View 1 (cartoon, rainbow, N blue to C red):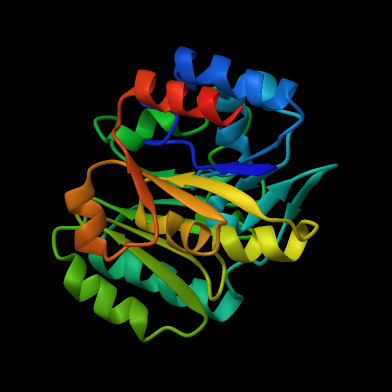
View 2 (view 1 turned 180 degrees about the vertical axis):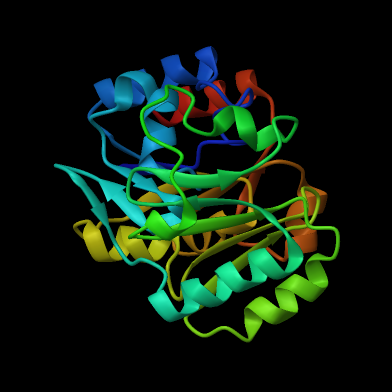
Length: 247
């Protein structure tokens, strides 16, 4: 069976590595012959340090905008005209941001932001000027005080997919139609799969899975209307035990 795992908030809870109990359960799944794919909002650059021994597994990064199989490949960048309009918004509102290129990135983010520690933790890339970004695969606008206004302007820009993280005050931007499931469908051989996720960016992945498992509480699942997924509490031991039962 194919298993597809989101990373942060699903199997990684410290922003640095997969929980040790879950890691052992994942190893057991793979030993039993199951296929493991990891799908994250992180770009491949920031995903590699977290997945550890699974670096050679297929990876879907940037909410589907980039993959690593035999090599790293951009699936669809943000169109140039749309990208330029986003840069104008960044300048207009003096926004904090992370713009991911195919490997390098351009970032203006405070060190107190939780996402800062996840940004190129192994120092594999360079923080380059915005104008040097050639393949803008994913943009995060951070710490938005008036995200409704910024979101309203972003919706007027064609060819974009937008995901709001209200609690963090962030907006994730990729090219239109790009998500974890669309990339799984387009770049991998057709197969039924079991999915694990915990956020809006896992919605399509959970929707089309043979079975989707939502890591979190039932109240949030009901709030989002994801009645097709089952919940598992965000407790590493419970998640690890469940994976062991599947293996």
